[in-house]
Length: 395
Ligand SMILES: [Zn+2]
Ligand SMILES: [Zn+2]
Image (cartoon, rainbow, N blue to C red):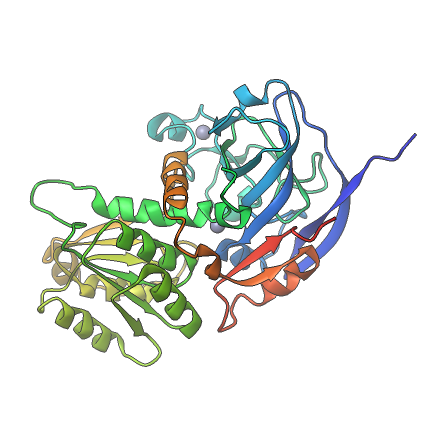
């Protein structure tokens, strides 16, 4: 009898370690799908997890595209497929969260809304590491069948209730895999647009928008803001490669290098650009607590600040003058960490619509499975923007 066919995955064991291990390739249950992974994006979250400890070995990577190699008879019904039905040979991209649909969070905010469900599973992220409480709906332990539960492996098992999109023939997998970070950017802009009443005007054709942080999410938010037609896009950031890339891709009107300016100088610069009043919207994408205060200083009276960047580093505090910066300004501040398949769908439309944007330039570090450890170790380098794991060269 032939031995079960095996395939490779980069297994994260905590503390900056990864080990290439082999597991048997799973077969699809009647309600599941098996993908051969085509590309997986390396996210800031992977870099954040990488040095941490973990209670079990796991395969990271939650930005995934793959080609269907096996699927159950009921999978077109049990999996939420947009652009389907799908069959073996089709390429797809995933929303990485599976929610339970039965808890209070799912009932209140809709099934599929991430970070509010009490029984979630996330492809490529051990649920306990997210610190959201609740129960891991499916174990991310790589030792347990079907093993392939994250994007940093040659295969991926797709469970029922997953949301996924069929990739059109003319969209490369390397572009489709940007769906996850783009959906974060789309959601952030969407939050700035939502009008809470007739008085506050935030995101309009005459708005000035400052994007703080020129990493992948900042760059993508700048692109979305630009394409949605605001008057002026300004990006602040501290790594030259990132600033240049973000400005080039979004056709930003101005960039401000935080290494050569003080916070006061930056605040003055954006006020000068707006006739002294301050900017309409700040999308804060930098993982720096002080940036929140700086963003509040930059917005005009009745301006809007969307806080996306300070999502993971809990325990850092900043001092603010609420009378002047929040109440006096009538500031609208929205923190963001939840997202939904709905925003992913909008992001998918955006990717399809804006094919002329050279999104692939975001990938400064492209690697294969053996090079992944090096990419994960390079994330703080000056020339790093985004890593991409590809299986293009596989036979
Ligand atoms: Zn991500
Ligand atoms: Zn739930």
